[in-house]
Every structure is written in structure tokens, then in C-alpha cells.
Length: 260
Ligand code: HXC
Image (cartoon, rainbow, N blue to C red; front, side, top):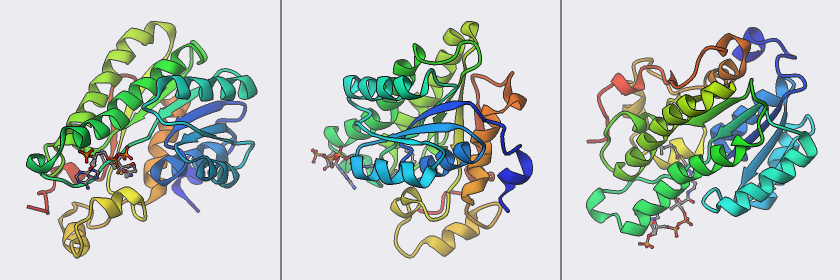
């Protein structure tokens, strides 16, 4: 049994609708499944149409799988309009699409830096901005998935740190501007989640054991330990939580950085 089914009522999100970017794999897909398992109808958007369709099948509960690139506002807006037409206004919007790789700043081309900033920061803005006119007011919960990079300088991560720090500040600004209409906006910071592409990509070969031994909890994160954070932010328990980042990251940010 997952911690979510023990913690949150099975019908907590019954009748609610959710739109997610980056919901077709990794942490995003995990969150989409958790929302659907608690009753929400979810639309997930990714770059790959076939992957989005497969993800929707996995998520269930009438999920929609849609394809667009978060960097393309017009395409994202069009796909969101399609989801709204079918599902109605959204209760939950989650900007989860991210791109990352390890690279030293001195070897990073301007285009490489821009690619990550465009996916992570501009993509989060595009998602939340396009959703602004399509959410229930009051009552909507908007979430941007962050990363330890938002607050912690890391070697080989200048691009991702700059992008995610921007997303963390974007969350605060939107929470302030959209709060009067009853929209809550928060960040959600995962730790290193087992069996995700992000975990594999950011792990230099042969470093896994050393990495685990530096983590305060001496293990990586289970998927249900991060999806629980998303469910909390969508639950009535978080009705006065806005403009902050919920750090479900097992004190990873306090551990010495292992890859120097
Ligand atoms: C140096 C690299 C590189 C690498 C790509 N580039 N990979 N530079 N080291 N390992 C450079 C390319 O040479 C190019 O620059 C520029 O980046 C854009 O690359 P493209 O492949 O043309 O871009 P695109 O197809 O848009 O792909 C974007 C991407 C890619 C970020 C580079 O990796 C991607 O699509 N990622 C999405 C999936 C992903 O990253 N999942 C893991 C997410 S995990 P030049 O100068 O040659 O044109 C995650 C965890 C959170 O995000 C971490 C916090 C952020």
C-alpha cells in the first residue's frame, strides 16, 4: 500500500480536473497517476504524441494525452484549450516539464544554456500563464515542480540552477498577483527519485553507491514520497499554503555534494 492511499481519501479529488505539462514520464507521470487515483480527470502534455497517448492509458480515469512543446506558447495554448473544452475549467495545473544534463559552464554553448532555460523557466511561465484564464477562481491550485537546483549552486548545473531559481521566484510572484482571485501557486521540490530519467541522467557512471551514502536518509526517494507532496498541495489541508516551495527532498540539499 502506498503512503498516498493511507493518507488521502480515495475520492479527495473526485470531480476535479488537472492539466499537466511533463506528465507523460518520470515524476510528472507519477503525479498524474496519483491525482487520477484520487478521482481527478487529468490531461497530460508532452512533446511526443505517442508517449502522451500511452501515458493517458496508464493514468486512467478518462485521462487525455496531448502533444506540444512547452517552449511554443501558441501550441501549448491550443492544446490547453482542447483539454478545457473536454474537461471544463481546471482545478489543478502542474508545470512539470524539464530538461537537464550535466555540463561544465565553460563548455556550455549559449544555445545549450537557452535550451534548458526555455524548457524549465519559459515553459513553466507558458503553462501557468496559459492556464490563468482557464482555472476555477477561487480554488485553483497551481504547482511548478522545482529541484534542489532552485536554491543550491551545483557544479555542472549552471543552466539548470539558473532556470530553476527563476521558476522558484516566478511561483512567488504569481502567488502574489493571482492570490486575490483565489489561485494558490506553489513550488514542489523533489529529491532524487528512484527509477526516473532525471536520476539516471544526473548520475555520473559508477557514482550511485557513493551518492546514496551521502544522502541524509541513506536512500533515494520513492515515487509515492513525492506524489504525496503534490496531493497535499491539492488538498484542503493546503488551502492557506501559497507562494512557497514544499521541499519533499529528504534533506538532500543539506548533504555534501558528492560529485566534486
Ligand atoms: C552539453 C548539450 C548536451 C550535453 C545537449 N546539449 N545536450 N551540451 N552537454 N549533455 C546542447 C546541444 O549541443 C545544443 O547546443 C543545445 O544543447 C540544444 O540541444 P538540442 O538537442 O538541440 O535541444 P532539444 O532537442 O531541445 O533538447 C533539449 C535538451 C534535451 C534539454 C538538450 O536533453 C531534452 O530534450 N531533455 C528533455 C528530457 C530531460 O532532460 N529529462 C530529464 C529531466 S530531469 P548547440 O550549441 O550544439 O546548438 C530533470 C531533473 C531536474 O530535469 C533537474 C533540475 C533542472
